[in-house]
Image 1: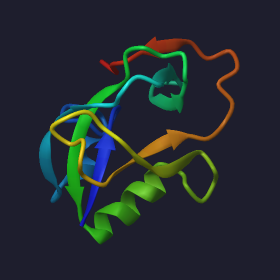
Image 2 (image 1 turned 60 degrees about the vertical axis):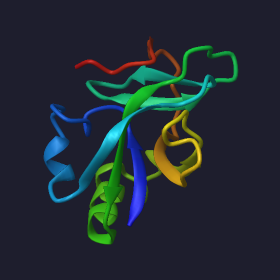
Image 3 (image 1 turned 90 degrees about the vertical axis):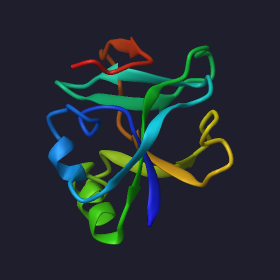
Image 4 (image 1 turned 180 degrees about the horizontal axis):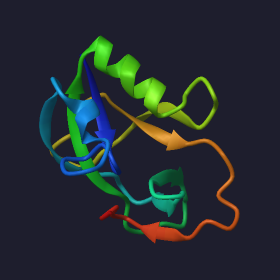
Length: 119
């Protein structure tokens, strides 16, 4: 099992939430400052932004091996769309090994949307 921090369309109520079927929701979470969301054609991308002061809100899920493989496909890891990386979160997940998907392409011309994806 892997712990995954999701912040966009995979969250409960999001249009890709069905990909989380069979996985276990553990709770709402937030990154420390240093991360920001950007609008990417109807879905968000999170990037490391050292000047950020708010962090990003999301959810932590326990995901099995098959679920992780499905998420990697959805997030386009093989195509270089996202990278799955370890991330530190604020309590209550501060001392747990968690990974997330970081956007891996240019955000030139893309608007920053701050800390919370609400679409």
